[in-house]
Image 1: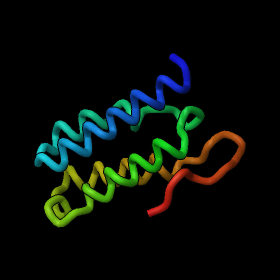
Image 2 (image 1 turned 90 degrees about the vertical axis):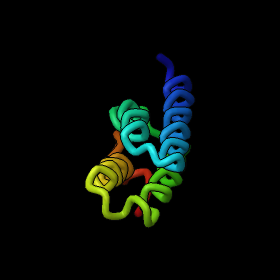
Image 3 (image 1 turned 30 degrees about the vertical axis):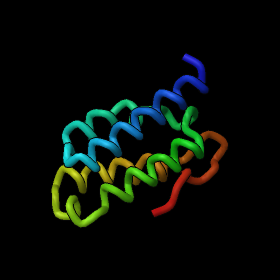
Image 4 (image 1 turned 90 degrees about the horizontal axis):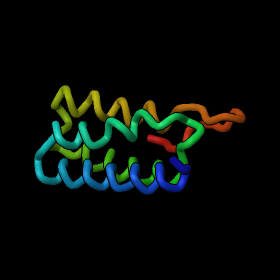
Length: 95
């Protein structure tokens, strides 16, 4: 699969995950994000990081702040955003 296709599919998955969070469906949100979180660092880009930052903002809302699964998902997104990319560049996002 091409880098562009992976980015488009991942972006759609992040949007789906965010919609699930807004609809109070944490399990479905986590499931939608799993493939995105598995994208290797060499295929990650700033667009995906931006989409994940928006999903993270919803996840950090008051409703999810004390939910253990939500906290784990937030940590997973943070790890994804902080992962070093090939060539030594720093992570793609910031908290």
